[in-house]
Image (cartoon, rainbow, N blue to C red; front, top):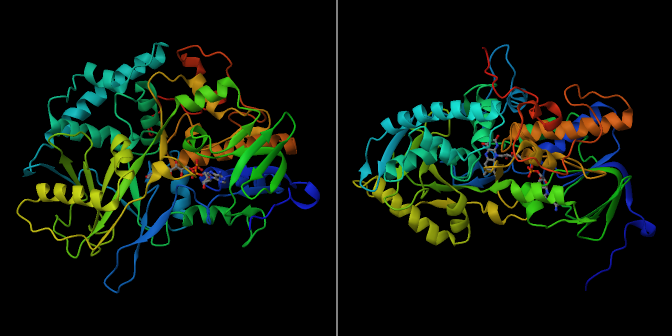
Length: 509
Ligand SMILES: Cc1cc2nc3c(=O)[nH]c(=O)nc-3n(C[C@H](O)[C@H](O)[C@H](O)COP(=O)(O)OP(=O)(O)OC[C@H]3O[C@@H](n4cnc5c(N)ncnc54)[C@H](O)[C@@H]3O)c2cc1C
C-alpha cells in the first residue's frame, strides 16, 4: 500500500547551510571548497548509489580466468595533461595522486577503412589539419574584433575544407571534430569551439590519456571526497532523487521523490544541462527568462560507446584506432577503438565503436540485437577476408535516456555569446549552478566540472566565512545579463564571465 510521508519530522525539513545537489565531479569539488574554508554544514544529495556522476563504469566481458573487466561508460580520458612548470589539468594532478592507471592515447595509431576493406586515406588527416590551422586564424579575428560568430562549417569551408562529395573526408572530419564535441561542425560555434580546444590542449598539453583502471575512473573523485568526508558520512545522501527546488532571496527548499525535504541557506545545483532541459526537476518559482534562454540555447550532446568482446583479436593488435567511412551515412560507426594494445588491456579481445548525435539517438532507441547486427555488418566490410565470429559479449549505455543525465556532455552552439553562457552559470537568488556545462573555458570536460564546482563552493564560502579565497573572480553572486547583445566583445573575456585564461594562451610560449 502507498505510504504517506511527512515533510521530515514535525512537518519541518532537514536543515543545512548548503545543499549540494549532485555528487559528480562538480558536486564534490564544491563540497571540498566549502570544507577548505571550514564550511562543513552541507548535504550532498545524489540520485545514484555512488558518487562520480558521469564518471561511471560497469563490468564487461571476461578475462581468461572468467572474471569480468571494468570499462568506463562515461568519461574515459584525462584530456590535456600539463607540461613541466606550466599549468596542469587538475584531473591529471588527482589522477597521479590516486594512482589511476592510464595510457597515452596515440591518435597517430590509426588505420583507415571503407566498405571494401582497408583503404589508406590518412593523407586526408593532414589536409584537415591544414584547414583547421587556417580556421583558427579566422576564429582569432572574430574574437579580437568583436565580430559575429560563425559555424565551424563556415570556418572549415572558408579554409578550403569541403568534404561533401567524399565519404572518406567525412569520416576524417567526424574523427577530428564530432568525436570530441558530439556535434557536427554545422551545429558548433567556431569561436568557442576553437577557444575551448585551445584552452585545454594548448594550455595544458596535447596529450589525451585513456583510463583503464580496473577500480574505475571514479576512484579519483572518491579520493578527492575522502579528504573531507568520513566513511559513511551522514552528509552524503545517496539514492536520493530531487524533484523540486523552491527558492527565494534568502533560502532554498529541496524536495525529494519520497516527500522528504531539506531546507538550506544556499543550494548548488550541479545537474547536467540535459536534466535542466528535460524539466525533470521543478523550480519554484519558474526560472527567469534569461536563465531559461541560456539553458535552452546551450547544447547537450550524446556520445555512445558500444562494447564488443570476441574470442580472438582479428584486427591489428598493435593499432589503437580504426576509422571506417560508410558509403552512405556520415557518422555511421566511424571510430573503432581497441583495448588490446600494450598498456591498455592486452588479451582482452575487446574493441568498442563510438557514435554521437543523431546516430546515438537512433541506436539508443533500438534494441541490442538490431545494433549488434549493424556493427557486425560494418566489421565484415572492414575485414572482408576474415571469418568474423559473433561477439561473446556486447553492451552499450543509453545516455540520452538516463534520467540523471539526459545526454553525455555539452557543446557550444553557433551564435551563443559569452553573455548568454554566463547566464547558464549565474545564480538565481539562492540557487547556484555548476557543472561541466557552466564552464566557458572547459565545457564538456571533467576539468570544466572540477573548476566550476570549486568556483561555486568558493563564492558561497566567501559569503559565509566573510573571507574570499576566490582570487580570480571574487565571491558572492555571479554576473548575469537580462539583455543579450548578440556578439562578445574582447574585454568580456574576463574572469567574471568565466574566462580566467587568455584564449590565445599557448603553454611554454
Ligand atoms: C560518454 C561520455 C564520455 C565522456 N568522455 C570524457 C572524457 O573522456 N574526458 C573528459 O574530460 N570528460 C568526458 N566526459 C564528460 C565528463 O564526464 C563530464 O564533464 C563530468 O563528469 C560532468 O561532471 P558534473 O559534476 O558536471 O555532472 P555529473 O557527473 O552529471 O554530476 C551531476 C550529478 O547529479 C546527479 N543528479 C542528476 N539529477 C538528479 C536528481 N534529480 N536528484 C539527485 N541527483 C541528481 C547525477 O546522478 C550526477 O551524479 C564524458 C561524458 C560522457 C557521458
